Image (cartoon, rainbow over all chains, first blue to last red; front, side, top):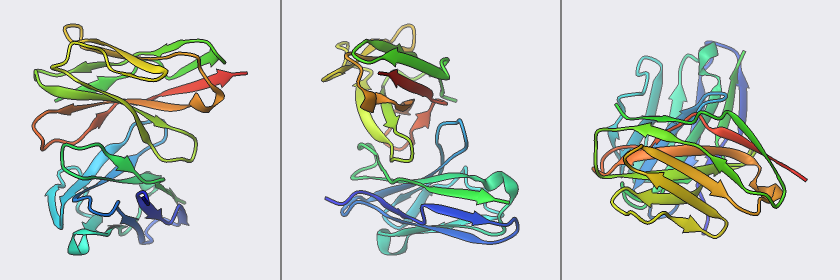
Length: 113
Length: 115
């Protein structure tokens, strides 16, 4: 069974540029999460989807971050414009049900110069 | 708000020896789940072990076991017979058993295994 797939693995951009990350969850997993992991820190939730509905986006900086989950499968996280402080690893995870085990992707490491 | 504290930023252990990673948490809830996740360098995070708060028996998974002290709000991970492949960041995490809350992670402990 394929795991959670994320791309790109690495991205280097200059500040004020846009960037997008893509996530393909495990087939059949209804719940999808985007976490941000700063260097030396644990992951922090940005947004959680139940199918195509964003049910918890309270930690998503909505002035520059946006996310979507079309048809309740793949998801895209976008930052526009990127700031220096956005440098982090962006982790996508999915679970079969909201209370189920989380399966993580390898993450997308963003460096903003 | 629930918080998870890992007081050991780094730990090291000799191969084949035993090491214990500490975790404390703060919550006013009585029903919740606790987890230990492993994150190898440049690899995805994987679940090591999980504990339901209503269970008194400590969870075990092969060489991994926990010491769950509910009254003390402590949840330590013991790794026995440490192997080189155990080297990774280890994150303690908490989730309230409402079915509608996300995982809250600690800052992690970097474990080195010395051959």
